[in-house]
Length: 235
Image (tube, rainbow, N blue to C red; front, side, top):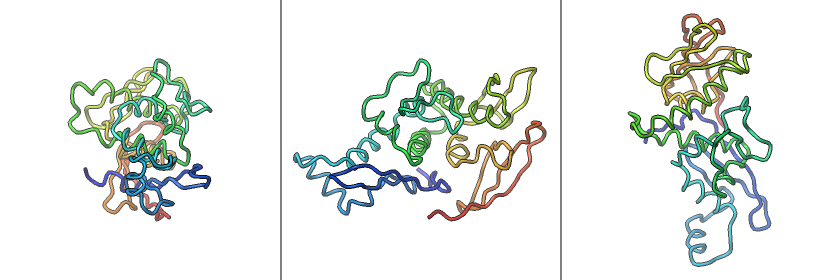
């Protein structure tokens, strides 16, 4: 897999582990345990019936669900997610409840839930297998709709979405018609670039992970324009 994570900022949460507060950190496409010096050694001890380790539980659950398509359905759709609930359970109508360890992952703070969504999205291959098309369309649709409604200030906007064709958004009567590839989730949404300087981002490209060329739309949905942004170095 390519360095799909390039340009996505690190994210970190804390949890109680062995009576101490430990960090769980996502960086460069991987979840890491910076407060554990010998993760593989602790894995071996756990396999032999050693003491429970909360950080290791999170890491192993993350690895088990790093390609789990349920994450795309149940995970956050962004800051304007109207279905998000305060208890951490995504209240998506008709969605199955997550298994306990997936529920635990979706409750991690510090931006880790967004990184898990990005990780699963990046695991899907191109071209999209026909059997996955409906599921991936639903995952993309929820995040595109959330971003478009918030950007335009139209919380009830009716949106149609296609995944094939030149990227764009236009009005057709009272309806918005959007065309965006599934890769928009990783290339744009996961990097926090869905809306930049009041403009909706259709596509993003970079050579170094810091300087980005964005194809964007103004709120009048006129012709796309390219803008260049440079992100601060991650700490």
